[in-house]
Image (cartoon, rainbow, N blue to C red):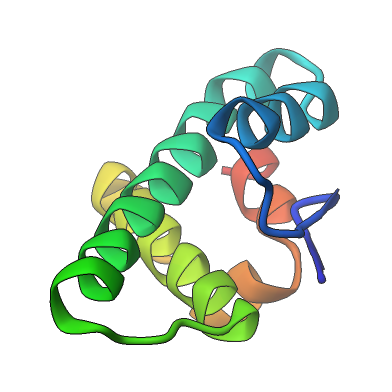
Length: 102
């Protein structure tokens, strides 16, 4: 699966995940935006980890990626609410267009 220019595969260790995001996000605006994707990914990992450990649920890769997209879009919309919205469908296709074209 690929989104935000990163081939998303569930890494074995959190350091691999951070490295994947950091290596693929270049440029001033992208470096600022990487925090959004990084935090949305960490939040999604944490929430899913809790569901797996405490509720014995199974999370597939597609659901995991969908959750990251939704969380990052919600956070982006909250940060940018005074500038108008971004359609979730646009965010799912290419969030960089949304980030770079404020």
